[in-house]
Length: 92
Image (cartoon, rainbow, N blue to C red; front, side):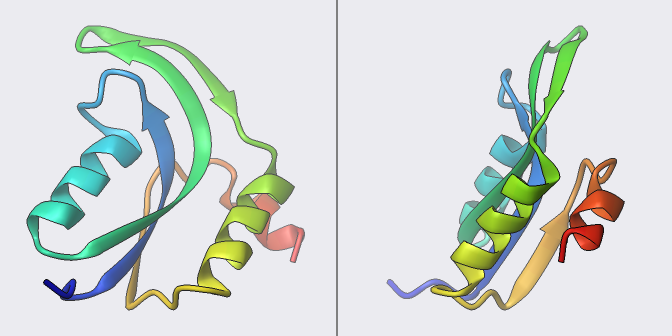
């Protein structure tokens, strides 16, 4: 079955799977679309809180985005965990 659309998800990773990129992938897939990702941070968290956040270097986030969209053109973009967005734009 062909996906309805292709969505680029730019977000942090939630180790518990309840939020962040993991939850976004579940939602996009449940809606019949294809999810692509660019990870902005890796977190250690569970249902009671966040223990740590390790940001991905802005240049690497930029590279993930450019490399992915150079091959698979997204129909939409979903952005979350934006604390690095200004630095990503500055690297372009």
